[in-house]
Amino acid sequence: MVRHWLMKSEPDVYPFSQLVADGSTHWDGVRNYQARNFMRDAMKLGDLVLFYHSNTKPPHVAGLARVCKEGYPDHTSWDSDSKYFDEKSSPENPRWIMVDIEPLKEMQAVSLADLRINPALEDMALLARGQRLSVQPVSEEHFLEVCRMGGVTP
Image 1 (spheres, rainbow, N blue to C red):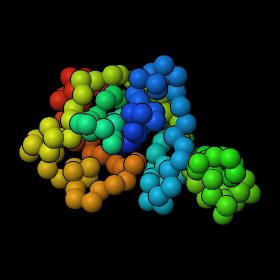
Image 2 (tube, helix red, strand yellow):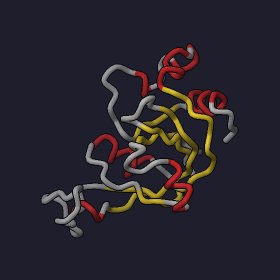
Image 3 (cartoon, helix red, strand yellow):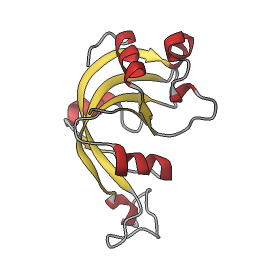
């Protein structure tokens, strides 16, 4: 069964257009245990992803992607030159996980404000007060509604 996710990236760090240009990427640098657990335990090959641009005006869903490689150790965590270095992580005992994703479709931007005013999305995790996870599950109903708003079919 395909699951649905939302993954956040700042457009000045890694925009959806870069994912399209690259063809796929590893999703490194996640340093929240709950988000890590989603990638390690629940994300599977073929799962669908809403690619969300955060920390921009306006924040918005920019495209659709798919998990193309299941969770594996995030090697940036044991690279002392990386901004994602974690001295408690090692190749022998990796603390952090990443997945690979590939682009599927660019979509008409769906702003956070538009998501908030849609009654069909009122209990979407992204819209909950204090929700800061960079990787989060999305129900199939919410996923399909966001796709509809963005003018794409998954």
